[in-house]
Structures are given as C-alpha cells and as structure tokens.
Length: 110
Picture 1 (tube, rainbow, N blue to C red):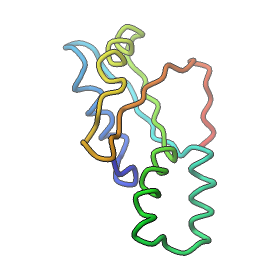
Picture 2 (cartoon, one colour):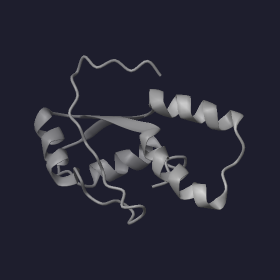
Picture 3 (cartoon, rainbow, N blue to C red):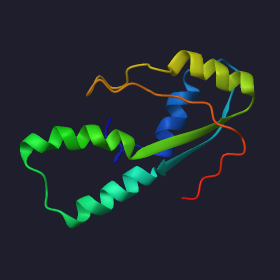
Picture 4 (cartoon, helix red, strand yellow):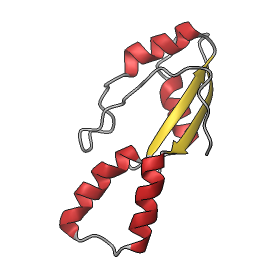
C-alpha cells in the first residue's frame, strides 16, 4: 500500500463497502504518526536510498501513517472490525489491515 497516495476518502470507501445497509462511517481522518514525522524529517536531510534500500523504505512507511474512523454506532464499528482486521490489502508487501479500538477521549494533535 502506497500511503503517500492514500486519501481519507479512499479509506472511507473501503470501510463503508464492508458495512450492512443502514450502517455508516461518519468520518475518516488520516494522520502522520510521531515516528513517521521524525523519520520523514531525517529522510529529508539524507540522500535518496539505493535500489536495495527502497523495499526497506516502503516497509518502514507502514508505520508513518494511521487513520481514525468514526462509525454511527459501536455495533457498526465492531462489525467493521470483525470483517476487516488482518485482511490482506492490495496484495503488496503482505500488507494487512491492522485495526484497533481507541477511546473516545483519544486526542490527535496533528
């Protein structure tokens, strides 16, 4: 999965496609992780990687971004979680969707 090309609307459509009629995704936000921000700042100061290092770079980018989705109800979120968690996505680099529940009180400062 090329996170530099993924948009919130792409994830919104993906998550919505696994819900039953009447269930809805209310919002999807895409964020850069603290690790990702630090890593990208370091990369910006260093030279472009060689071919052998590109795959390692692509794999490390999985940790650069995360998304938070809000559903219309806890049961909708649970339904989506049970269908999508660990599902292989795009058949590239063995990328699997990794879902987690978070508290409503979770604060994003991005």
